[in-house]
Length: 199
Image 1 (cartoon, rainbow, N blue to C red):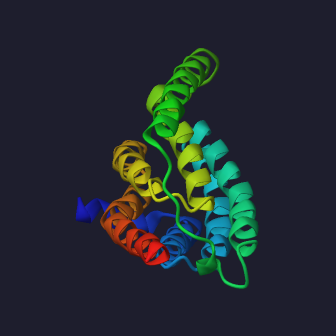
Image 2: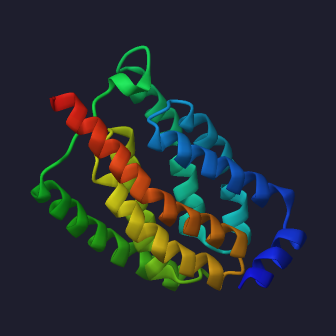
């Protein structure tokens, strides 16, 4: 596994390496609720749009176009909380809201998966669709500073490791492994922040 990652890093374009570094910077800053995370998100996703088209992961490419727009939206929402991003409080939403969202996501995933399978040479159309729609929802939750976003990302990132590895994007698979390791820090940091708000 490590040998494959090293070999791919040597043969892969500089673009993927830069995108991976920027993506890690994004998550690290998001954990700290630093508004600069959105700059790194925009930069990384702009690169990934092209990389995923090459890998025939069309929903992932569309997802990264969405991420780019959400980077602008997230920056605006966090900025509107005050002079610093930390002034926007961390929130939690009801299980009913999340259940309704998951039902809609499953329906959308089935529909887009069938469409991709019927009309394109897409790889893994149903799994690709499911992780894409989940990620759209989770990104919205990050922008709104909803604590539960981290649990969605945990599931998405575990699935994404398998998807990217199967498409010979080992370096990106490694990125998502790093994400999985970093997510607990996000859960702890945002939970502490929320408790501090209510104290």
